[in-house]
Image (cartoon, rainbow, N blue to C red):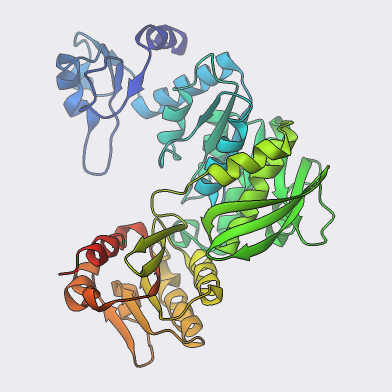
Length: 435
């Protein structure tokens, strides 16, 4: 079956899905293979449970009623998504970066929603499967799409660009993350720069923080730049932090003058995310007062830059993900936060490969230069580091919870930061209900 025929079936059914447990709504079930599963094994069950068709690539299912046999289900899904994107032909903004891409994506979507109907990536659907699934939720009512792109290996951003064909690109920043897959920091930069290369060849413009020297090194000379930045930089939109107590307040210079924006984001490092959203809004002719309204109305979720109050204690929660760059920024911001009785709870930074030992030791050395009431470290990587007295180390978060009497905590200011797999969010519930 060619892509055009499959597309007609997609339009008829209205949806595709990859989770065989979600068949009751009809649509096309796409059988994908994972490390520990093969979606083809669930295709017939999906059909019996309500799927109208099943896209499969197992020879065993060839000729089965309701099954659409193809050479490769994943590649077919990607081709279908690209075909759909071309048919609708609406502007697509692609966002990638080491830190802040999800927050930036959500801020941009919030700003654009003040003027038009926006499709934005949901959850963490930002990879070779998630991007196609996102694009296939586009419909004629949408006027613009904001698509997040993640990567942990070279070439992935290039692949996602070929699927989504973005008109605009934005790289939030580049840092030390997924180095195990990229091989080095230079590998990170090269992969993220694939977005710039695509826009330079086939897109329109890139939104760029011109105060970031790495981004300036990565960008092709001929691509159109839509700039933003801080301080006295020569940019089209500039702003600066105007306070963080504990939420970030910033002031941004729009064409008609300065506007103060009071966010619900913890950390001055979110300034560049706010500026990116404001610059996108300005480019699409959204009134600055509406930009202010949208950004001030945004509330972070999924344990990203959140402030959680539990009794007399305040927790800065940022444990959706962690890498050396974001960890350093979070600690330095926490040091400047107003308050006493400061406690650090840090979890391992994963996917650093051979660099892991050195990067975790750098974090230890960093925190050794400051005074905290207590420091708790969780994970086998932190266990291997050399640290001073008074630093408590645990292999798992459950061991920490079993050891610490949270019922005695009063008026504590706590930073909770680590990779998602460490599950530091359990700390929040433990403090709410001490054991």
